[in-house]
Image 1 (spheres, helix red, strand yellow):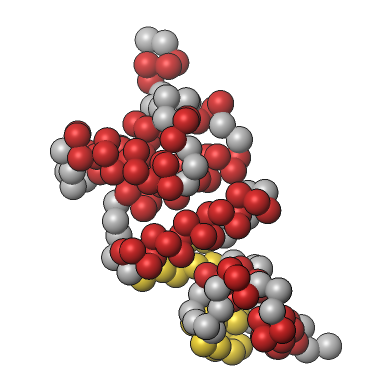
Image 2: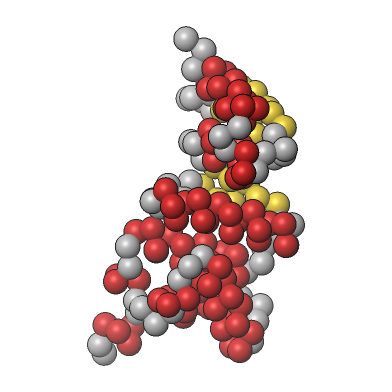
Length: 166
């Protein structure tokens, strides 16, 4: 059996959990997968195989696959870390638009203060080893358009000082 017969395309990978869990018919799974692959900017790569994709593109396939399941709670641990700055920004925008549309609970782990302020509305700052909650902030007022604003930068500095008091 050839390798391409054993491997799944980007589209098949995105459809797989929907079909395996019997949450969708083949047609519905295809429709949902195509929708979310378009949302993450991979509509042109549906017939590609994962080994032909960059690391960032593979990450976007994983995000599309997770979102296609339309979960009530989604854990994302550093999902945009492998992405370049422009793609990261686009994915933040898409994630916020999807959240606004679907309103699922998102537990988003990031080491980026700015990303936490943009994506989060409740931020927990953790201490290193063992991880304990050092502080909790509500910051739902910030969006991508606030990135360079005085209040945004002031809050980012406040978080930085809480994390690195010296």
